[in-house]
Structures are given as structure tokens and as C-alpha cells.
Image (cartoon, rainbow, N blue to C red; front, side, top):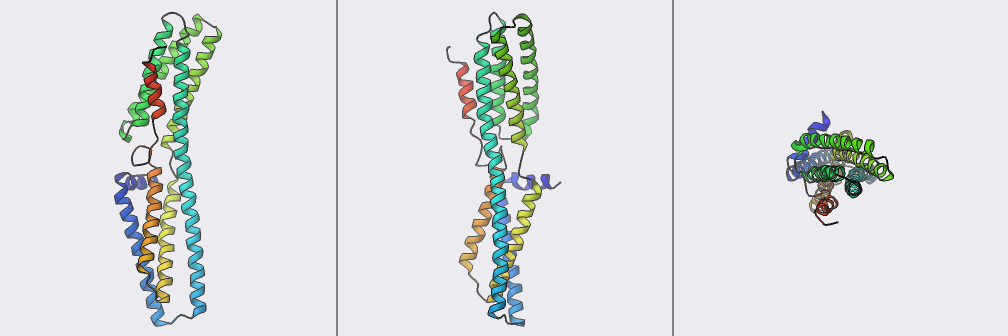
Length: 266
């Protein structure tokens, strides 16, 4: 439930998501400031008490910064995993295709053509900018894997040479790379961690506003700079966490080069 709500919030537009985060942080800061100001008027704070409030607020902001850094690290690791697996799949497809050229007779070109179609579907999967096409592309991938394996079984029954063994091994690697890549594209930052980051941000920024109100210091410019930077960090996490939309996406260049190599003379 939390995963779906967060996905709907971030997948609409990052601009809207960033605006909502910024407004929420500003509201929390203003609420904290006015509560601190109201308390200071009813009971003027001493320097020692203000120092204690500042220490607690600093601790909350430090813990929040740690949570933000941890979340960014997880999101970046997911992105790097997708990026590396695209390279691995491109290499696996290229290897299988080259080995199919060593198979004698009509069986070699036949399985090579299936591998070419498989590479094009893999490229379409990585380049897709919509989540709606994933089921169709996954079904096409599974169908091609079945056809390729059936063709490989026929070849292995007719020829048990080391070349055939090498082709079978490369096909298995190609299928495993596709499965790992699909898992990486569907894996995101845990929703509980994202919601905890949002809740912690509101509490810590509210505490900062309370401290400013209790001390009678507004600091409008610095506060806005902090809020914008904090909202930007959360937008960065959301962008890294969306593999198909947004500004930060995996470069499909390795698969493009692999598909282009199919038409080059050998």
C-alpha cells in the first residue's frame, strides 16, 4: 500500500513532488517557529535552555542527514546495478550471437536470427519510458527464450561438439542476465525508508523552526536555502528510484551497439 502510494506520488511529475515536499517543509518550519515564538512570549528562554534546544535540534538534523545519505546510497546502488546489468546483458547477447555463427548448416543462422530478435526486445525493454509496456516486453522475452532454447536443444542433439557446448553456456548466461536485469529494474528503495525520511524531515525542520522561534531569530534566507536543498535531495532520490521516467536513466548504449553489430559484415 505504501509502495503504491509513493509510486503514484513520484511518478506523476518530479516537479509536483518537489513542490509538495518544499511546501510541506516550509509549513513544518513555520509551525515550529510560531510555537517557539509563542512559548518564548509566555516564558522567556534563558541562554542555557536555548543551548539545550539547539543541541537537540542539531542532533535531529544530523540524524536526518544520515537518513538522507543512506537513502541516496541505496537509490544510487539500485541505479548502478541496473547500469551494470545492461552492460552484462549486452555482452551476453553479443557472445551468444557470435557463437551461433560457428554452428554449421541452417541451424546456426536460424538461432542467430532468434538471438537478434532477442537483442532488439532487450533494447526496447531498457529504452521503454512507460511501465505499461513491461508485461508485453516480458512476455516477448519469455517467448523468445523458449524458441531459442528449443533451437539449442535441436542443435545439441545433432552436434555435441565443444562449439555447441559453448553456445549453450552463453545462452544460459544471456537468460540469467535478463532475469537479473528485470529484477534490478523492478527493485526500488524500500517505501518504509522513504516515508520515514519524509516524516523525519518534517519533524527535524519543525524542530529547527521551534528553535528559531524560541530564540527570536527569523533567518528567512538561510532557512529557504536549507529547505530548497533538502527538497532537492529528496527529488534526487525519487529520480534515481524511477528507472523508466525522469532525468536520470540507464544509458542503453551497450545494447544499441550490440544490435547495430548484427548488421555489420563478419
